[in-house]
Amino acid sequence: MAASQRAGRRMGLENSSSRTALMDGVEAVMREDGYAALTARSVAERAGLKHQLVYYYFQTMDDLLMATYQRHIGRVQERTEAAFRARRPLHAFWEVSSNPHDARLNMEFMAMANHNDAIRAETIAFGEQLRKVGLEQAAARIDAAPIGREMFSALALTQSIAAIGSTVGIEAALGIQGGHDETRAMVEWWLNRLEPEDEA
Image 1 (cartoon, rainbow, N blue to C red):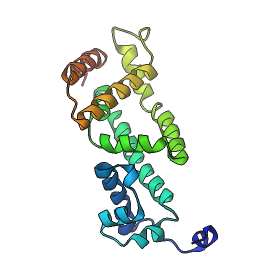
Image 2: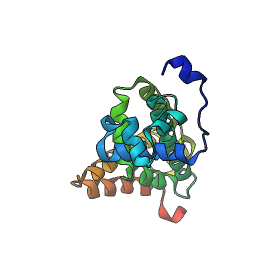
Image 3: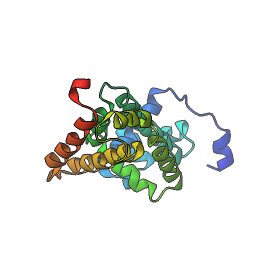
């Protein structure tokens, strides 16, 4: 089908259960077989739909992948923002960052970003945006703690939590466990000095 024909044809509703099922199918294929296995047929098969429906709801496979990725990072954003609304935001952010839930999917999207310019651009924009979430709460915790802001900035603190947590989560998803208990204990030791339990 020519690009002009695709652009002019009617698309399926964005709130359709079939459209959602196709995005769920993308995630299922990525978790089980990796992003290289993504095709209209493989996705539709996981969704229990005919592969022609991919192009009824999405102009191209790239559009389907982008919609799925944006939904995924939207969930990450929601979890992160919810963490910083918690009574002990740094502890909650650490739990979100180090949770192995969806770590396999994160790895696949990161691998895809190396080969897909649109996914890479979305990843960069999201990463920069996510670094701004919770900075005020982190700065307030640093200012109130005995160790003080002279040791590190709010951005360095949140980025360190995210980076260490991501590594722990990805390794746990792969089955690597060595040093995780010690690492968690170290991070929590620091966080308990920034966010004492009696404050909660």
